Length: 517
Ligand SMILES: [Zn+2]
Image 1: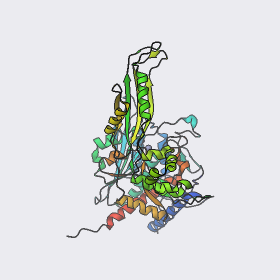
Image 2: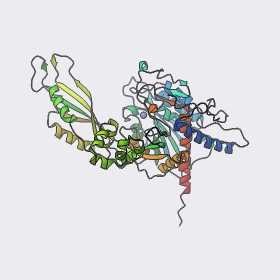
Image 3: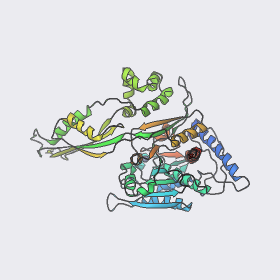
Image 4: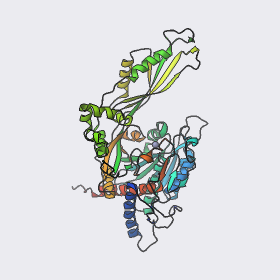
């Protein structure tokens, strides 16, 4: 896609090269990406000019991010088996090179012959006046089939102002932005009020129990009583211009404050094994099929959370004309307007935001047409809305199945937790959003999937899924799909915007009046 033309013309030399960022606008600059980038870059140029008056020009804080990302893409870390150890070492070297305190923490492998796994941690010490902010990302990626990609997924090509490859967005691109942000802060040489902690973990793509969870359980000292955490899960949707019949929609900064909770189940039945020519009534497979048929017919009630209602309110102006009222008042429209309800629930992504969901994903029984297997198993990917409990859910599934011969085992579950949106960090994001574009809308939202954020919410850390990058629909298709990519302009704007958010947070803290005696 050419939505993100190369905005910064400065060649991306070695990090720290004494080169002032040059802003050139070559060709057409469509969309909000470019506009926002330009505004931020102008802001930055002002800062750089002020700081560097009479001395050598300072490098752009985002320079080098694309090259680092390309390098990280080339280091294999497909999970399973992971092998994130080499990625962790590379990042530690980059951060240590800027004088930061770093640690590489070995984490467990699944099989003893697997490549080494590790997390990487770094600390930019502050003055200790405020509790730390953690920048969290993950080092593992999902597999990619080279035959389906236009460019080799693990070559880390940089072409046409874009970094291509698996992990460009999810999540090595996040890691690279966090690394550059930390290095830019370190190079200023002025400590902030709080520590900024960097954490890159393995194993996120398969649930994080051997990654973020391992760190939280075994190395709580690395979290340093953190107050806030930023990780993947939310981004900025660029402004949409008005096209026939629809109004223009301002840029939307989606800050994920909560996620659905997984309640992954395995159903198992047993029966008499035997010859396929003489079927018996107590066979395992028909029994499992009967149970699954009852499960798939479960109708879950609709429940509209505040975060979901506000998200759709913000999307209303951009919705098809017949859905605008429904989006603007989601709960009551779903209850009272049956044709809106039908249209809304026909969208699987929308449906998942207002209901618990069950996907029957794995079936496992028998291997030969003429042999009746003695056992049959199925796996269900269940996602529960915040406030629901997996144990209660299992009890109600057992009631629906109404067959004591069907065993139900929980494979993975954790409760969904929310972070409040009335915090100094949320306000800092809002302030930066409005400075970037006074029209920007900042939305606290829920996502249907889950990230590693919950391991930290469980420890009372306010965790937001938010990475400042401008992604339209065409940009996000590569996440877990083919041709994943991110523009250099987006990476550099990400660093500049994250720096602005951290500075805003710093200023809001210093505005707090001293208590009087
Ligand atoms: Zn991810």
